[in-house]
Every structure is written in structure tokens, then in C-alpha cells.
Image 1 (cartoon, rainbow over the protein chains, first blue to last red):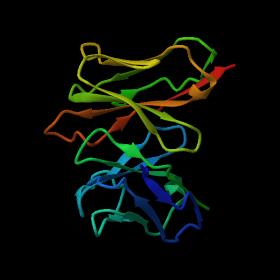
Image 2: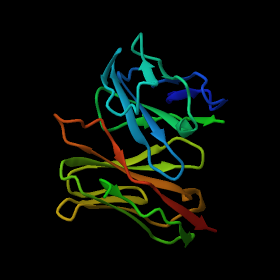
Image 3: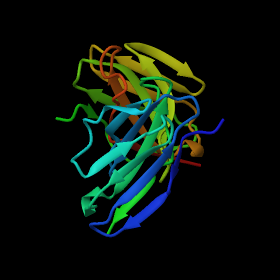
Length: 113
Length: 114
């Protein structure tokens, strides 16, 4: 079946701009996660959704980052006033219920110039 | 000290070699242990997961967990050029806690030469 999909695959934006990154999880997966992976590092947890609600947003670095999942399926990660330090690969994962067995999408590579 | 330590390599081996990849960790709450494979500029792919201590085998891959030493390993037998990738270990706490919150190592870059 179809895996996790993410769009766009690449995003280049100027410092100070607003960006939205989209994730479409595996059908039937109720849990959705966002991670950020900087070059040469492992992914770092940002936020976890169970259904429509953000059950744990403790990994979001600051209030410029926000994520939604209004209908319990597709999720959007929103970054306001982007900074060069936000440049990274943003990964989305999903799982059957809250679970360590997570399946990742291909990621969105964000570059802030 | 980071919660999960992983030697980033790079590791280069000839085709057919046995590869050993390792991680150490400091958080005794970790109960679930995963290995992911990540090809360049792609998302991580779940290879194997184990719960608590012990061994698990899947084809050419064997995962080992030694909780007493806080040490986990992934062995790849008869390595192939297509195994060339970055291998990430990941861990999470047990049920009832934040078992969804994966903590990753930095990843080890493996190259298998034909």
C-alpha cells in the first residue's frame, strides 16, 4: 500500500518568510509525528498527534513552529519568520495508534537563504 | 553526554563481509530498540525492532540488545552494495510512558564495495 507522503520534497525560502510543509500519513494510522533532521544528525522529535489533537508538542523549538491536523489525517507543519537555522530535513512519520513502530515519509528538505 | 551515542563512521567494507553496527545509551528507561536504514536524501526506513534484551533475526540482519551494558548492535551478514546507506539506531521508553518519542543516534554511514 501507499506509504507516508510529504510535499514539497524541497523548499527554498528567504529568511523571514512563512512556509508550510504537508504530510499525508499511511491510511488508517491514527498517530502522526514530525521530526527534524539536521545534516549529520539523527532525527529529533518535534510533535505527536493522536487523531486531530497535538498530544505532545514538547519538541517544537519555539513559538514560530506550529502544526495542525484538522481532520485527523493530513498534517501541516507551519514555520513563521523562518531563520537560517531552520534549514533541515523535516520528516513526518505515522503509526497505528501511539507506538514506537513508526514509518517515515521521504521528508521535505527546507533551505532558508 | 547525549542519551544515545553512535559512531558516525564512515565504515567501508568489501562485498560479502559481516558488518557490525553499534549504539550505546544512558537512559535506563529505554525499552524499545529500533534500527532504521536511510539512503542519501531519503526518509528513514524501519528495518527491525526489539523489545528489551535479546536477539532478533530477519534474513541477513540480526539485532542484539544488552540492557545490562546499555549496548545494542545490528549485524549484517553477506553484505551487498545495496546495503550502502546510513544506519540509525533509535530507542523509546516502555509502555505507559512516552513510547512514541524516539531518540535517535547520529547514524553510521556504511559503504559496501563490490
